[in-house]
Image (cartoon, rainbow, N blue to C red; front, side, top):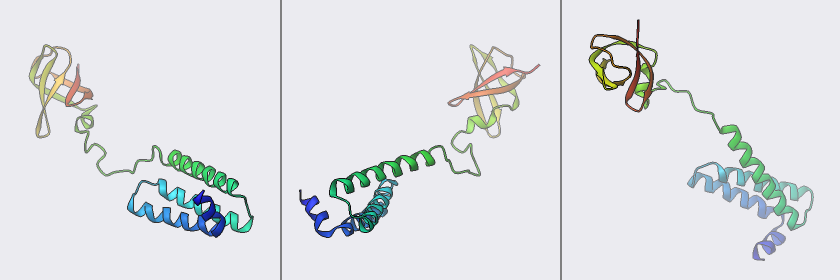
Length: 150
């Protein structure tokens, strides 16, 4: 009940102060959630300043705004990856998909080796002799999936 008494005694300014505290916490604990709680607190304070509301409605408004703002931000930011100059930086094997090369070692028992750039890669595919031209069709970890080129 102390929180209710605090809000009752300071009125809308308690929400504005709580919103500013949430915004300050966002600087210390980044993640985006505190930002939207702070915005919801400030909006609740301003709404209560212009239209007096009972404390249950104030909490309902704060909770509803917080939920809407956080869910809205998560939906908006989901799937928004920043473009990069090197999209295959941590996925080196995937950058070779579609390229053709010549086998250095034959594929026997499903596995062989091929030289690409400055690295020797393990390849998986049908049994093929050394010197056979191949096309890289996929990657599974550090193993390149290949097929013969006619």
